Image (cartoon, rainbow, N blue to C red):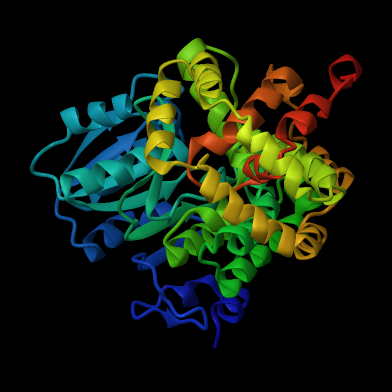
Length: 457
């Protein structure tokens, strides 16, 4: 039985320790051993800790997640005779940064052999990476269905100013108490839905990158992600009402996305240019104090922006001479100066990374351009196959009450245009901005994006 068929019947069937031999040539497996998703699931924590081999727990939370669940978790551990210590961040809005990681490492109790992160995106990312650094086990107790990284093998962190996917541990188990999740702020549920909606773009770009750069691609994993998206969008009206079964389906969809990343060994199945809008806005927030919102909300907005961009790309025709002339005249020093100015200190690191990756090399561009030209009809077909219309995507977000434009989170379209320009530099991952650069049309298209929208919204 394939992984998609298994997932459609029961997500727990994907936790096979031996993994699954796939037609793509890889064996897909995860280190996750248990998912406890039900009302009252917190009661299972002492048992799950023992099954993971934990003898002394280091409890990690922030003020919000402590009130939501961690206080009760501490009581349950004490009642079960499980020794534990705690570190509760003082900040109400913790950022997943190298500085936050340093705080956890500083306060970690050396006798502990397992970290129990009580929270969602930020706490989970920090906890997974801390567990890797310290060489201990990790369990997550989710407090909101707000993102898809619960059981992935990476942490989304800002390290030295740059948003990165850093290799971390995979949780031994995830505990999701539906009584807790149902009480999560509605904005966090909207964020989780936005993160799921983003997969339309991530799968589209994964397929295009496979054609243009030869990047590894697995149709089975891609279909697993599509299943996650279909499951959630089918529940959008129920989610808007806070229906508990719909919340469970959203969480399971997010977990499928995390499993897809673990199976692939990369973040590509769940992250594309739509995520990079969010990453750039977060990096600028840390550097300049500009507005930002929850990651998933920003990814939802980024998905709408990306869909508008791909509508333009779908109507283009490659012109090799124009593309070659554009790249020949591309001034890398001028571009690097813009990156440094727009992103501050983190821009300097991006420049350093590009000098190693050489993504703007003339020879690399020529190779990609030949493949783009040869496969252009297929690329246009992929866009049409994978991506709903802009109106459909906006409708999903509006139904659940989530923001659909940068203006709704305090940003403007000038910021969005510049974030899109820089998105090709965040990581060495082929996306819409790099495709337009290869076509020699990036500057021309960006100048036309979202003109007049500022006045209308």
